[in-house]
Structure formats: C-alpha cells, structure tokens
Length: 487
Image 1 (tube, rainbow, N blue to C red):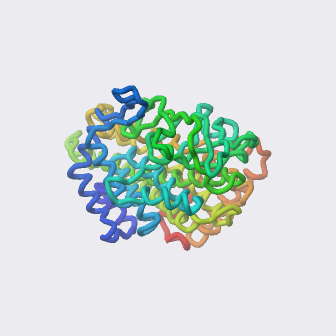
Image 2 (image 1 turned 120 degrees about the horizontal axis):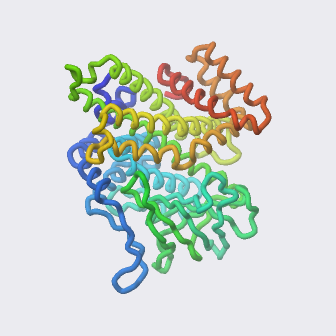
Image 3 (image 1 turned 60 degrees about the vertical axis):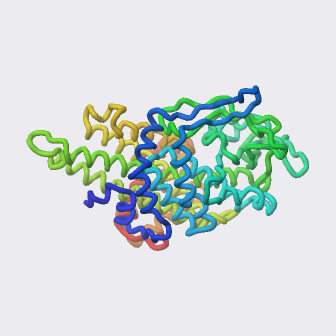
C-alpha cells in the first residue's frame, strides 16, 4: 500500500503505471491547483454559486450566467491544458481524460463543463458536415481565453431514462437548418456556446428510433439569443456548474448525421460522458482518501494516531485496493473509447464490448465514490459533517455521480441488453481469460448464462447482483494483471 501516492493525482497516476509526458504539463496544472485553485474552488463552493441575469438594464433579454471573477480563471486552466483540444489535435483522448482526472481530484463539478464540451467536439468532428466543422469546431479547440464551451441536453421534464417517450422537443426542417421547439429540464452547463440536443423530427415515431441529434448555437445567425434560460437549479452538489432549464422556441439547429441513426449518435454522446463520469468517480475516491489520510495521521486517540490502529489501517488497505481496481476499470474504458470512437453504425463486436464495459464502469465506480466519501466522513467523526471542512463536500459531490448520464438502473438495463442481444459478455470474459482465475471465470460465465435462461421479466429483476459482481470481478482482474489489448 503506497499511501504517499494518495496525496496528489499525478503521484497516483504514476503509481498506476500511467506515463505523464512532460509536454502534457500535468504537473504544472497540478501545481496551479495546489497553490491557487484549491482556495478558489472552496470559495466558489461555499459562496460562489452562479446566478442568472435574465434582462439587462434596458429590459432586453440577455440570459447571462454570472460567476465570481475567479471562476473563469479556474475554468480556463483545463481548457488551456487540453481537456478538449488534446482529443483531436494533441495526444488523444487519454491525455484529455487525464486532465479530467486531475481536475476532478480538486473539483469534481468543474469536470462537467470539460466533459460536455469534449462530447460536443467529438460529435461535431465525427458527424458534422464540412461546413459545420469549419464554422463551429475551431472555437471548441481553442487554447486561449476565447475558447467556446459545449453542452449535451437530452433530458426533459419526464425524465431521461426513457428518451423515446419523454422527448417532446420537435424539429422542423427549414432549408439547410432546422427549427427546434421544446424545453430541456436538466441542461448542464447552460449558457454554453454550443449544445447537442435530442429532438424528434415532425412525424417521427414516438420511440427512440424517432429521435435525432442537433447542434444548437447560443446565438442565431442574426446575433439574437437562440435559446433562453428559464431558471437555474438549486442542487446538492456541483454548485459551481450552472444547471438550468433551457427553452427552445424556433431555435436554429443543425442536424448531425442522419435522422435515421439519431439514437445511435445520442448514445455515443452519453457514453463519452459515462466514461468521464467513471474517471471523475475514481478521482473523487482518491481525494476523499487523501483527506482521510491527512486527518488520520494527526488525529490522536487512545495514545496514538488513529492511522496506527489496526482496524483503520486495514480499512485504508482495502480502500487502496478498491481505488486501484476502480481506476483499472475506468481507464480500460478510456483506452477502448480511443480505439472505437470513429466507428459508425452498424458497430463492430469490439464497440459493443466497449458499451458493456462503460455500463459496468459507470455503475460501479460511481457507487464506490459514494461509499468512499461516506467512509472518509466517518474517519473524521463529528468533524466530517461540518461544512467548514472539506470532507463534507466530497460526499455532496459524490451523490451526483450515480445519477448523471443514467442512474444505476439505466446502466444495469443497458448492460443487460448488450449482454442478451450482442453476447458481449463472451468477448469480455475471453479478454480476461489469460489472467483471471480459471474457476472464478467459469463461475462468472455460468452465472451470466443462468440469468439469460430466465424469462425477460425475471432477468431484469435478478440482474443487479450479477451486474455488481461482474463489475467488481472485471475491475479486480484488471488491477492485478495486465490484460492483452488494454495496455
């Protein structure tokens, strides 16, 4: 157990075998967070919640999101470092996700804008026509203070799990553009320069097959507001990130890809965010453990620091192993995303393997983040529940992770679907077979097949224990051994 590796994100990443080339400047970014960013982040969490100014003093609608002055300075650190541009013009997705990991260690909520901006850039790069790419992609990839931000808005008031039934936003073609009318109830990073929006073309069926993906700029071509913001949400965590209700009224939009394949594009966007959610979950786990370690080294009870007591020492060892396993699973999804991200429907078996791994990782790492943050609060005892100390914040932030971009139920159901329809569990177990314990591998394979022999309703009812154990099995196998095709 390398407790020293818990103290900073770069130390942990290096202990996990991740190479950090000097040109990526991760250590420079980490130093900024240690010397300036921590204090800014803490201040914003306590006193800097963004607020909406809907009108200027002349009564004109402006829908301006107002932040403390230092928020913008904090936000720009990751954009400049390459949280988006690395993916398309730098060292690739792994570098972008490592910047996300480092950011989430210090401020999990701040990773949200980078995530949705990255998802916007990737979708535009892959499915936008040359004219759209030339117009909108360069601003997203800027490395200076004028960088644009993206957003991904799918959820409406009816909820996000059943998009086919709940998306009411209608799209009407108008020459080279479309016009959208509807509302998005949970619009993260509202106020963004560009948003990816799910909408239903007029006359399309009221199923997921009837949805398409559109690019929505903040402003119309004539310079007027292209969408308005009804209000900002008051929520438990990620206080620095504006989540609001966006109103679309004859909003100018541009179709990405084809209408017929819209749901596949939407799911691709969501899976990028799910990979990022897994990375953020692991980073938050590490931060919570780092706070617990700093406290346990100095808190004296029964004549010695509590870290020296056998029970707590054993808990640290178990949490350390869990952290390593969670990172191995999350990092596997990053590496696979890099290899399959340019695939288009119909997808390859490797793409469906990525889907299964993403559902497992999003489900399991988010739950581990919540439990680790809760444990860190328990290590602190009464001090852990006080808002003036940092550990209370990490539990608040962790509670968002299981819900954003698909609840645990959604991950289980989608994971079960890719197992039952695509047989992706077979590819997963085959991938693990060179290093996994043969008996454990055989038992896991039999459990999956036994579940699949049940009637569909019973499959769903009994899926969670298997899904949870499969996620843990994959994570622990990856953390103990190098697996072909993953390094």
